Amino acid sequence: MLLNYSKLSLCISSSLFLSMEDHRKLLRVLEAAKRASRDLQNKPVSVNYDSNSTIIEPLLELEIEAQTILSTLPLITREISRVASLIEAELQAWIDRESVAIMLRTLDESTDEDAMLKLMNKFVTRVSLGFDRDLQNLILKTKIFEIFEAMLCDSNYSKRIREQSALAIAALVRFNKNVFVGLVLMGPTIRALISMASNCSIQVLSTLIKLIRSPLVDEIESNGEIPKIISLLSYDDLLIRAAAIDCILEIGYCGRKEAVEAMIEGGVIEKLMELQRMEDRRDSNETESNSENEEVSVERQTGLLGNSPFASCVARFSIQLEVGEGLSKNEKKVFKLEILRRVREASSSEEEAASVVAEVLWGSSP
Image (cartoon, rainbow, N blue to C red):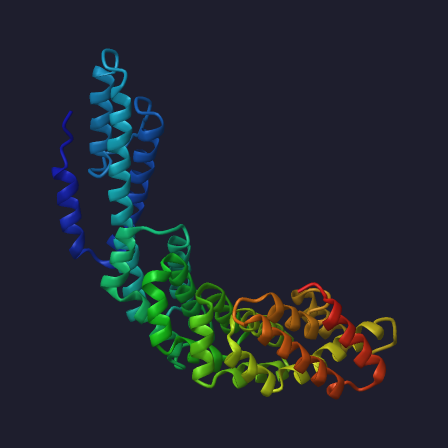
């Protein structure tokens, strides 16, 4: 059974010269063709498309051929499904090329932020579906990672665009760590995320630490970025403070001795004590009379964070070091003693010291 691809090939070659609007129209046709090929795999002799499209035509020709010989060769349906699957893969690769072309042209020429964000988000969704070798080759060929990294580092772009660029970088690392981790470690991404100091940028940093683990923490420590991360705990924005705690906990879990030392020497325990004290005070004052505006402000922000974003944060940090993978057994013991010492020094009362020390010694849910 032969399938004539001449019309399909002609369409592919001619797409190189399409306008932006024609690219969008072509994408719609490609999506329809992909649906046709998928249906052809599922029901090889019952697909019914009323279309004059030259893209879908080969699929319909394949159906007609199948109907004429199926009665004598039932096993041919397996071959039909196989061919349809190959067609679907080719269509997906074509869709990816068109989508990337539209996105890159929009990022380069458009000033419509909503349009840019929509296409960037669509790209993130696509790479989040899992590894695809053709898509990876396309990403490397078009230098998409470098484009997103440049946008993240360029303060002339809006906060929304820079944050979406950060999310795209994290998605690429998930897509294939073997390829994109090196680009993250060698480039300015981490410094840009920390200097941007938004809730989203620090969340992306935490995600990258989870994905890359000790090599990224080593890079953060060697570049002197840990004090900057700790300073985020003093920001007025509760969302940023909560994101910073999550990041610090990830560093504690993955970090080696030098990184943990940098955090402790940088005053992380004292900062965490302040936040925990603030959380305890807020909880104890919930029933007291406060300014209505203040109550609304706190509730609105903590509602996004959970009921107690800073509760037991010292013990949570200690537990991360204890169960983490970056320290030796002896180093864990030494750091725990240092944490206890600093807790006692930073406590505002003996009662507070006893309470926090008990949490550190006996544990709290991380």
